[in-house]
Amino acid sequence: MMKIKKENIFLKCKACGFVSDVDPRHKLNTFILKNPPENKLKKEEQKLKKAEEERVKDAEALGEKEKKEKDKKKKDKDKKEKKDKKKKKEGEEGEDKGSEDEDEKSGEEDDDGVVWMTDTSTEAAKRRAQEQLTAATAALVTLGNLEAEQEAARRKAEREAKKTAEEEARKKAEEEKKAAEEAAARAAAAAQAAALASADPVVRLRALLADKDAPTVVKELKGMTVEGGVAGKMRVLYEAALVGSETKMDVTLKARKNIFAQFAQDPQSQLAQLIAMEHMFAVAAPERLKEAPYLLKQLYETDLVEEDVILAWAQKADAGKLLGVPADGGKAVRNAVAQVVEWLQSQEDEEDEEDDEDEDE
Image 1: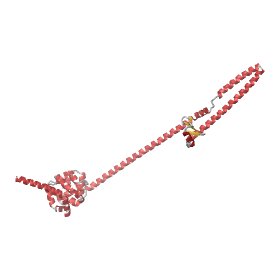
Image 2: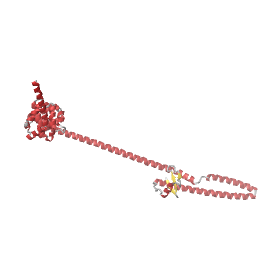
Image 3: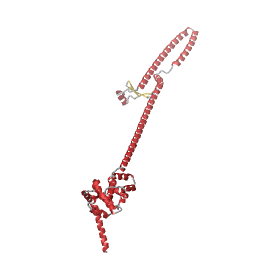
């Protein structure tokens, strides 16, 4: 702590009370005197400061009183010495008696001096006052420690409260997520049950594809009674398996080859699949017509439909009438797969040429 008195700067240690002065020749000394710091002592420090000043004043007053009493005793002693010298002139006996009295009184005064010779300097008075302040200083330090402990406890309580709130929020979020998942599962189960009970064979078969194995799906499809016979059943299969998914149709077909293969055992079944494909791109999902050539190529490469069947279907423009495919729709589908058909036709021509060469030989 820094104090400024009469253009002098003193530094005082708050812990031990030691006071030291600042060199007046230092440039900082002049600046501080011109711009003294604001007095922002706390109430406890102001009380301690006031108590210290009062104790210093009391100590100084006590020292002055002791000094006056000492001076008075010295004057009394000098006065008695003068009287004793006067008595010596009157007679030897009086002199001896006076000398003895003087020695006794001198001894008493010396004893009194021992009692009153306590250090009465200003520094000693300040030191005694500082000793008296020890308890108050200790109380101030204790108060500071108590405030620090209270602040630490407050921060700890805030951290624990924040942690508890976060934990509760996390648990609540998990519970809400779990509840939402359970609700979604119940909704899906209800939708699945409704789909299985649906009168629409496409919806019913799509539900089976999502939940059952291939043999169950094949059994259900074979047992259906739909318009169009085998071609009608293939229409249901193609729409349920391919239209209901956002995945590319040729990829889905390859993944579910084991189901489609159960309905590709003979040329009639293979042709039924091509008619179902034609209906799908012309009526059920015309917006996905660009996938037609890839799907037809996949049917050929996975041996689901033979080359001859594909070429025969391509040449029969009214094949889709069986499922109610309009003429312009059938034409659009054949135009979309024309390159695949031409490629297959060229392969067949090459094979025919090879066969002719073999016969000539």
